[in-house]
Every structure is written in structure tokens, then in C-alpha cells.
Image: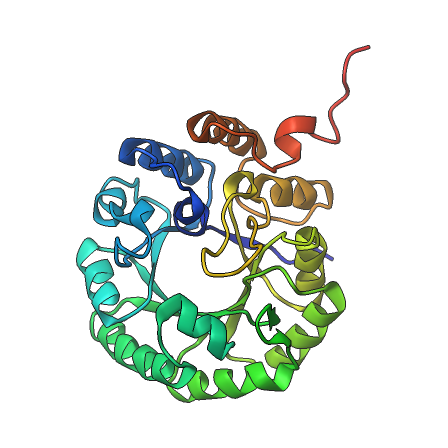
Amino acid sequence: MDKPKIHLTDVTGRDGFQMEKEWIETEDKIHILNRIIGSGIKRIEATSFVSPKAIPQLKDAKEVVRELHRDHVEVMALVPNLKGAELALDSGVDVVNVVLSISETHNKKNVNKTVSESLENVTAIHHLVRDQYKKLNVSLGTTFGCPFEGLYHVEKVSTIISKLHSEGINQITLADTTGMANPTQISRFVETLTKQYPDIQFSLHLHNTRGMGLVNLYAGYHAGIRHFDAALGGIGGCPFAPGATGNVCLEDIVHMLDLMNIPNDPDMNKLIHTSKELERILGYKLSGQVMKAGLANEVVPV
């Protein structure tokens, strides 16, 4: 029996770049993102339309989106509010990704709203996006736990999803924002939520904060998830979460999937080359493993 295909969304341009303290030139951002698109990725979260005061690194969002190679790829942008959604749609993105956190504490730190206020915000954005015939994705930050409030039971998450589902929202990302999840928890959450909401396309957004990114991804795949986020070189993290580290690494995921004969889109060699370029641009060693060690199925001459 053929194994189900995995669909990867690259989040280098948003979740990756937002953590960088040193300014990355706009042309370098565009170059890296276009190289990632050229690897065969089908969806890319290119940036965020957020206040430059909050995240100065992404103040060039409009310019970045404008210069992307748009053939055969969906361009997504994250937004925190209605104003951000308007800017994103004006720039021509295909998918608006609005974020709210399960954690009241993290949500207040991240978007300065209560969870209830954020749900009202999502409703307004949904109406705007629907009226313009675009897609909406809702990312649920701290789905599996929050350093301020601890680990969660799935019922806490299901309550929020129920409200989104009643609005007709059918694309939801379960985000392990601070890398607190474990494979057993991932499996339990995914099996419960996909059974409760079979018409929702769930995706997983995983961080490697405690070294469980790849095993959590595999647990999610076995539980039925087919859509995952990742960042080149494993860069990124949440600026409003203590101890946050990078996303699960895009090329390391593709390497694992290729070895396991799980279908996916990106070309491994192109990703490794681009990851090395990104390392040069950022000026420090990235956390990706395959770019350092090489492919497991390559024989090294003696």
C-alpha cells in the first residue's frame, strides 16, 4: 500500500526570520524564499503583517511578498489583527494565517488580547477573507502547553476549536509554540480532534525546543496529520516565549521522509544548498543536521 503524502509549508520567512536580531537585507530574504520555492515546496508562509514596533525584522513584508516567484506555490502571511489581514490581502497573498494562543497568558503577551477577544478578531478576519475569495488558516499557539500555564488536556483545545468550527473555519494549525509536546500527547490530541472534527484540515507546527521535533512529526503523521510546518536550517522561534528555539528543520524532515519512502514535494539537494546559503547570510551555524552530516544513504569514499 502506498504511504500517504506529506504536505510541507515552509515558515522560514515568518517564524524563522522573526527571531533574528540583526537586520536581514530584503533582497536576501527574497533570494532565500525563492530558492525554497524553487525546491518544489507548495506553500510558503513568507512573512507577517505585524507592527514594525513589535517585530522590526518583518517591516518589509509587502516588498517580500511582491517579489516572490508565485507559480505553483501558495503564499501565506501571518496576521495578528484585522489591520494586518487587510495589508496582507492588499499585498496579494493567497492565504491569511491568523494566530491566537490557547494560553491566556501567552495570548496577552503575543497579541495583547484575551482569548475571547482574539476569537472575535478571527470572526472579523474570516468575513474579510471570505468576501475576497481567499483562504483563511487559524494557528492555535501553545496548543500542547505553555510555560506560563503548564501542559494541557485536549478538552481545553477542543473548546476553542468548537467555536472556530461553528464559524465555518476548516483549516487549523495545532502549534507546539514552545516545544513542550511529546509523541504520546501528539497522538492523543490528533486522534481526538480529527475524530471530533473530521471536516477540518489540521496541520502541525512543531518546534524542536526539547529535541522532540522529528519524533513528534512522525507521531502526528501516524495519527493522521498530513500537513506540517517547517523552517530551513531549523531557525526561528517565538519572541514572546521564554527559552524558545527553532522550528523543526525543513531539510532534516525531507531527508527522513525520503529515507522512509513517504512522498513529499521538496528536492533535498536544493534545500541543503539553500540552507548553506542561509547560514552564510545569517553569519552563524544553523541547527540543521543533514546540511552538516550529509545524506545517510550516501557512501563516503575511504
